[in-house]
Image 1 (tube, rainbow, N blue to C red):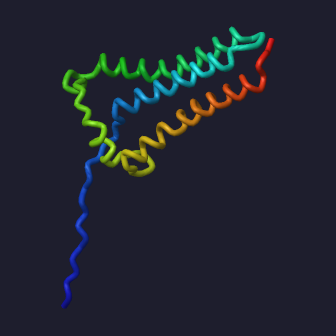
Image 2 (image 1 turned 180 degrees about the vertical axis):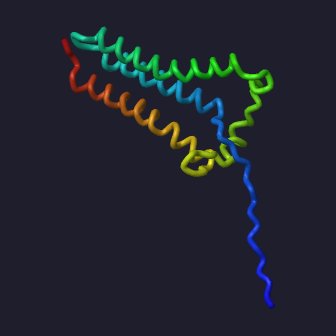
Image 3 (image 1 turned 90 degrees about the horizontal axis):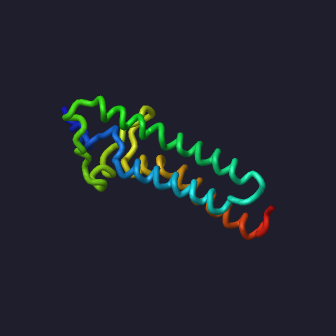
Length: 138
């Protein structure tokens, strides 16, 4: 009678929390997007209204998560408030748990930052093209 060994499953470290640097990157990319819109599209007859609406939209976009974090921090137990986040390299090598399945930390980072980075870079390119194509706009 032959015996077959079962494969050994190594459990890799798991997390469902984002590293604080990811939040900082999202805020930084959002600020880049707003600044590129302000600097490159601030021309025309409705300039003030356009810039006000864009600023309000992105203030709400960044402000809601910050307010939620501040509310959590104010109401959390003292032992939960400690900043015990691991170094970024360690976090990115862990498995990141999502509702739809597990991802590596690096893949989660890419999926989170790619949309806002693409919009910020794309809006900057569109703004530069707009400035070159339409040098004077009343």
